[in-house]
Image (cartoon, rainbow, N blue to C red; front, side, top):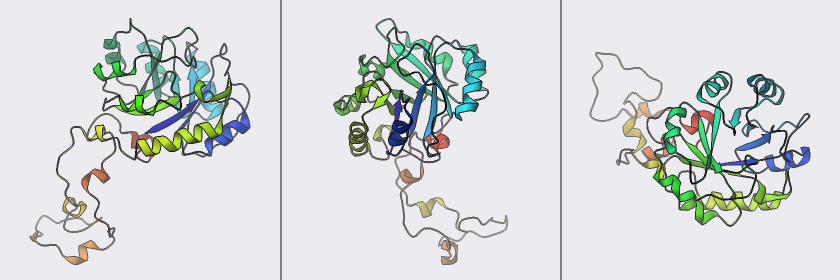
Length: 281
């Protein structure tokens, strides 16, 4: 499960939060926000992805901040249309935010399926960070084809509520105001406790992500060519019903099942989460 901590703005706090077992940090570049970021920020481990949060800004602004802050994703939190998002995606991966209320039409999701991630947040005037929840379980009824993160008032007490979302495309959570001492300043211990609990509640793989995978649990050796890793098989080579022990040279001694070698989002699809981060969640 991806854990994104959004709305960081203070240098030491950025470093302290980045020392935790998280996957993304979010920097808010929406000027009216209390969490608005200006000036340089410290370097953080490269395995933690940096997300720039933008609201109805210019594409040149996103380009400039992508270079200056070495961003990995642009999170578009405003009313950006398809043509705008297409232009942004030409130079940086995109997280498109959808603000949910009783008037939201899920059919709009179909027109943005080229995005790398969706993020569902509560519809408010301040474009996020309100601490307000929407009815998360409504996501179970949506036909969502893109991996998505849940946002909108997530607090330390919400682990059970998150588990009620059964959608196979749920891959992470975005936390913010419920973990703050003041706007932009996160309570490191509170975040750490939540992260630790999430790792217990959500081990490496969400069982829902196995939907559509083969039911077989063959040992990995049965999925590897009888000639072993890295070798080619000539057309005239005879494939024996038994395996030459020499072909096992260089293989791991363990025998993980097929589930252990498939990305957590399953077979197929446009982009696996492990393609972006280099490791599964």
